[in-house]
Image (cartoon, rainbow, N blue to C red; front, side, top):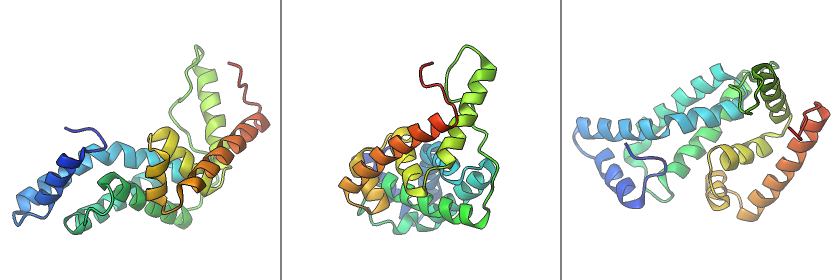
Length: 188
């Protein structure tokens, strides 16, 4: 299976298959997209909704939209950009329907020798991320977690690239401040 993102030639061939008259070819094309993007969509959804259950609901809805509209996708942007754009919209819609106050219990994202300390630091990070605005969380997730470039984030969100730079800068500053507020030890 290819890794995300598809190269331009593979993406073009995939879109041809997605428009094929054969249901088998269309299904195979969708399955390839699903396999390539399911982890990224779920990860982004978790970070935007702040809840694993909501993230799973959002990911399912994203792939329903992708399944229905993949044959109509015109390729005016990269396939990954289109899927991330759908994910951002759907994740925020799901989050708005189910506001939750419990912080996200992430898998430990910070490596420490002490598992209990690792879990606590991951919880603090999740709480700090939850305190950021949706715009800042989105830019941080797309850049840091999904590895999108500033240009790709701008395309995904439909904003100027300079806005991405400034949001990312402010998001990092605010995240650092939130972590300090929570007593997060940045030295270890």
